[in-house]
Amino acid sequence: MDKSPTKKSDDVDNKSESAAGRRFRQIYEEIRSRISLLDYPPGTRLSEEALAIEFGVSRTPLRRVLFRLQSEGLLESVQGVGTIVTDISNEDLYQVYQLRMELAPLLARLSPLPITEETVAKFEDLYRQSEELTKDPSAHGYCVVNIATFHALADLTANMPLRKAMELHFYQTASIWLKSLGEDDVARECRNLNDEIRDFYHAVKIGDIDALSHLWRAHTSASVTRLRQKLGD
Amino acid sequence: MDKSPTKKSDDVDNKSESAAGRRFRQIYEEIRSRISLLDYPPGTRLSEEALAIEFGVSRTPLRRVLFRLQSEGLLESVQGVGTIVTDISNEDLYQVYQLRMELAPLLARLSPLPITEETVAKFEDLYRQSEELTKDPSAHGYCVVNIATFHALADLTANMPLRKAMELHFYQTASIWLKSLGEDDVARECRNLNDEIRDFYHAVKIGDIDALSHLWRAHTSASVTRLRQKLGD
DNA sequence: AAATCATTAGATGTGTACAACATAGCAAAA
DNA sequence: TTTTGCTATGTTGTACACATCTAATGATTT
Image 1 (spheres, rainbow over the protein chains, first blue to last red):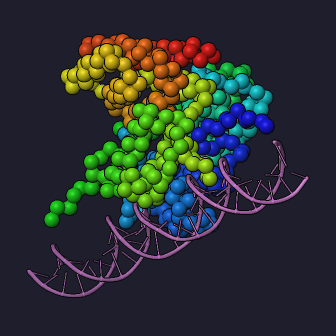
Image 2: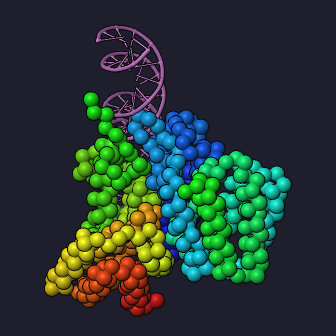
Image 3: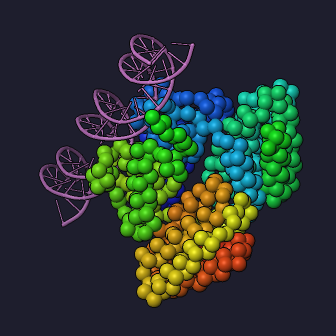
């Protein structure tokens, strides 16, 4: 028979995952999406039983998802109180951003993938979406485009540990970003995101992933600076 | 009466953690230790029920620990088969090491902590331990000193996300390292570890954390090079 | 003898009842 | 009015029984 190369990474990536694995992945991504899209803003108290009923499972498999999100710092469970969406302090926020800024340039250093026409098309589409977003700014739209842009960038490295680390720290801060700013800054941030993606698009068009990674770092740094000024720290 | 302050952050670090949290932490560290010390070498099949009985709990809280170790890539569970200690491929191993090499210099860039007399004493003690290890080399002794050295290094940054990332990727490769080499290379690797820690000790003595971090990277790189030569890739 | 299929043992996955715990609300006493 | 303590309620944590799945085993058929 075919002794498959046994390419099993750790948990999720293969199409040949068990029924339990697919269910886990689906629920996990749904809840994480709700957190990062501010459907569950920081401080929200979730109910295990309510979520279990909603997803049509018992508490047991659902808790497995919550444990995972808890280990990733997105949730906190306290017996007798509830499961709360993490609202990290400003200091912790800065620490995560510091690390994100250092990880960004590694995109071009650790197993960078070749930029294909498909990649260019993806960033062109993101640029178009961000253009529309500036015409009708919204917090939800910002999060959607921001998350999609992140994944487009992270997909450019074949180094899975790096990609996972980037993903972990991105989602740790994704939901906090807009909440820390006021609702009145959403329009401005949408314009900033538009400028950011335009820069990305230009770098991708000429196939310069090194420039792309440092543009990423630069815009991340600028975002933190705006946040610090806003919070007056 | 005394209403204790009950300051609880997220999961582990405070002394005032719940009884469930302490139990989780204890079992988690014990099993992780067994994996990294090669008591459970890669490929070992664990039994949830046996472990539950050993630790005096039911399968439910024990599975929470296994889920965590699974999400960290140290275990893999397959229904109907069992829970197996991960034995990652050489390619995945190199990818993790590539990231570890990039993370090492960040020790001196992201919130480095001042090197105190206590730090110097800690590295002096590690140096002494590694000296003894060279006189009586053993795989177990190597792992013990290697893990202790890692924690001494990681403790030098106040950036918790960085520290956690370093810890994650260290334990992902810690148990594979000696296993990939033959038993006949243990003595040589003990000497290499001794040289490594001597370099670290000298850098710590003069308070140069930047030199320390790059020595760390250099020795990590050399370790990978030896492994690649051994495996002939 | 070889191949095929049913059976069986043992593993993880799931559902459910109950325990442990924290908080809010209310009542009673100072 | 304020404080204190109790009770009710809802939450997460735990234990256990059962479902589902895999691999090995042995019987049966070719």
